[in-house]
Amino acid sequence: MSILEIDDLKKMARRRVPKMFFDYADSGAWTEGTYRANEEDLRKIKLRQRVLVDMSDRSLESTMIGEKVAMPVALAPTGMTGMQHPDGEILAAQAAEAFGVPFTLSTMSICSIEDVAENTTKPFWFQLYVLKDRSFVYNLIDRAKAAKCSALVLTLDLQILGQRHKDLRNGLSAPPKFTPKHVWQVATRPRWAFGMLGTQRRTFRNIVGHAKGVGDLASLSSWTTEQFDTKLSWKDVEWIKERWGGKLILKGINDVEDAEMAARTGADAIVVSNHGGRQLDGAPSSISMVEPIVDAVGDRIEVHMDGGIRSGQDVLKALCLGAKGTYIGRPFLYGLGAMGKDGVTKALEIIRKEMDTTLALCGKRLITQASRDMLHR
Image 1 (tube, rainbow, N blue to C red):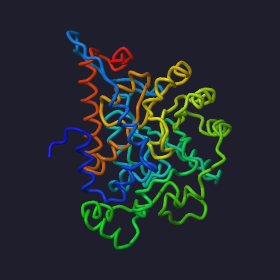
Image 2: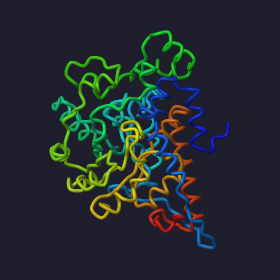
Image 3: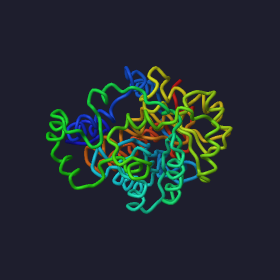
Image 4: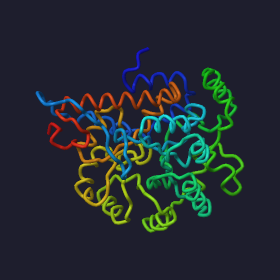
């Protein structure tokens, strides 16, 4: 089949990835209302068509937190990426590096910090969840520093886990359980299954063997229930920032008041995000909060956006509203599940082409010229 848009990769991934893992990537919390709103609200934004302007020598090059990027798109931190495709985090990081965009490794990854560092040549970003076991958190930060990660992305909106009905109904675990349902899901995806037999990376390798008393970890939900720190507060950002000592990005801001508080921490950037609609169902879409947050704090801290991006046009719309960078999660996961490393590259290529063409048709040559005057309002 011809792969022309992200949805084509999504359809391929659905056929190639066991249901429980595809559903994990392709789901939201509760009614999934916020998950849907993230996409729907982006679609509602209209662009101004401009004609008879010089469209030559276009460039999508920009910067995110001072790092040069081929386009203002980073791969978002996504848990269990290595269950979409064997060695998934390594392959996605390699694709991002070759393309010239940041890759962000999740704390809840299948491949460890060290796995990714050993298989890439440029610094990547690391996303941190704060756990009750502080010695383990200190160790995670130190491991990210040792791997020469160039930014720490601190996720603020997952102190408790929003209920995701599909995961509970599927009995999600990594590796899968050996129930008839799970065996059938794996058996009907032979390419995936044989690939998994060829790797040792089948559990949460940032945690297993590093956290006290954790010799095996199948369930993300049980770990979050037991270990995620419900007492996490703004005061904790200070010691994390000090321990890390490098570029710090705060992810999960979806309210102007929280953005004001984030700007006072001295962090380098915030990510306007509702966790892809996977936490507070009924929260505003990410794109609807970009403009008010940029207006409130954009002169003091760099504002990024995450949630609902399925095209290069979506990226451009976020930039027009004032975001300096965007993150894609599901689009690269669909690519990974569909075609491995080549699929991640394909997802990035699709977004780049759509953004470049749209930029030209809006009468601009440089992505850094994106502004609100490109929107039809």
